[in-house]
Length: 369
Image 1: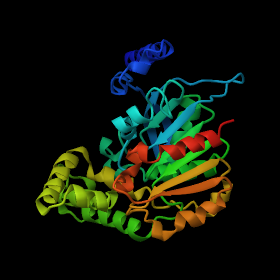
Image 2 (image 1 turned 90 degrees about the vertical axis):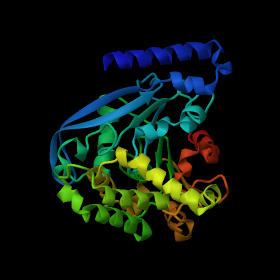
Image 3 (image 1 turned 30 degrees about the horizontal axis):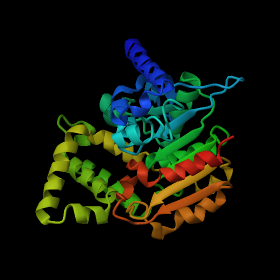
Image 4 (image 1 turned 120 degrees about the horizontal axis):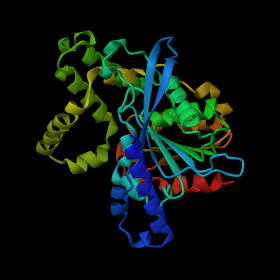
């Protein structure tokens, strides 16, 4: 692990030298993204106690970083950015070209030469501790508060980061952004939340989550979580339920304009996704939102807070009006709804920074001190 960190550190130093020499201005951003390998690490929390009262002797939080922390005269970190991923994803969700090229590259809004980007895998996902590591359904029943607690401890205890210039969260990370801004109101200058609602998960969103869990647990092959082989029927159905509400109707109607094209997409999607997923992990991931409901505490948020949703998001449809209503409780809160267009990608629009980075730019300028 030490060699990997050293190598990554040297890569970033080389890039910084090249930037200072004005050479990187002519360097293809895609090449920069290939060379800017993130540093990886794990933070082990001993005897971690979950909100449920359960404990783990060792809870592993895996994370990646890009850039280097900068500190003021008092030793306070001034350039840290925490990036929080969606429900069934991991920190790797931010390593796609749209972010690496369009957000973290030279001259971009969150240029890794200027910012210290911190990208953790949440409990239950990626390289962090999860049911599929061995405990299966005996793994502690974690929730969003547990996730926020581990994120905060990763920053303060392990990375020695005592302040965030920005917290950016997508989907589940959007919901975490609200909890962070309530529980640690003075910790960040600004919060940028995308694709969620600041209310209890109910309606179609809750229906979808319950159905996903039910089809897995009702599959005889699940065997109470003690399966030898993945319960393919239940898990496949659950994945398709999630995919169904995560896409853009307009984009899919245009992209897959025939029955044959759409059928092929569905078959290809399952073939691609099924080997990557574990049924017990999926159960825990979607159940972890069970007690999320920040709306009564929104007045505690004092940071500059910007919430962005897309109008074609089936999971967070604009007709509910919940964000417009609740954001009024946030002293420095603002809501932006991106109107439907051929460019949107439904709930997944957060993976296309060109759709919303102008609003992030505004937030960074407003919150600059």
